[in-house]
Figure 1 (cartoon, rainbow, N blue to C red):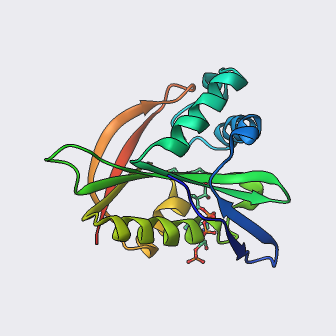
Figure 2 (figure 1 turned 90 degrees about the horizontal axis):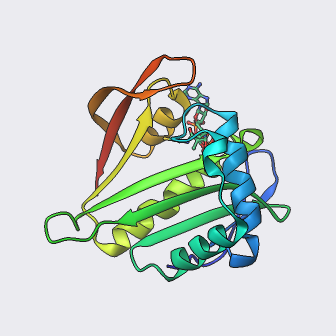
Length: 181
Ligand SMILES: CC(C)(COP(=O)(O)OP(=O)(O)OC[C@H]1O[C@@H](n2cnc3c(N)ncnc32)[C@H](O)[C@@H]1OP(=O)(O)O)[C@@H](O)C(=O)NCCC(=O)NCCS
């Protein structure tokens, strides 16, 4: 799915562009996600788990743009990837009323309103598609994310204890949230 380019003004007055990533930016996308995974323990992978080639990343972006059930929106600041989010509309007769969200923004751009702007677009897309339930998960302790999600109308529905184990051997729970449209 393609997201039509949109300009947003951040809390610090900077301009950012929300748009679908393009295949030419595959390397930028890969560098962004590796960096993001090294900046926080609240994403699902460590940076070294993104050890994939540019060609594979290009193929992933191509697939994404052509996928009828996934909308990916990247945030560009001064031509560089500052963040990315994704909504996946589920298939299947018993699950097509649901859509799942993922989001990650580089640390230097946290708290500037990018996440809020992205959620506005994701919620609008879900409403346009007739989705009934939006869902997402976050890792225990991610207060910034939880605040954003609750502000956008999501509620914690259940907790799965100890589903993540970090390098230091400590465990983290996963919180599952829903928003009914
Ligand atoms: C979580 C994340 C997506 C939020 O995006 P963002 O662009 O920083 O979000 P916004 O700037 O739109 O909003 C952040 C809100 O959190 C609030 N906030 C900041 N730090 C906070 C904290 N420690 N506790 C609670 N709220 C906090 C801000 O005040 C702001 O609230 P407001 O809009 O009511 O003023 C982003 O920080 C991020 O990508 N983090 C790292 C990766 C990650 O955690 N991804 C989510 C995985 S589930």
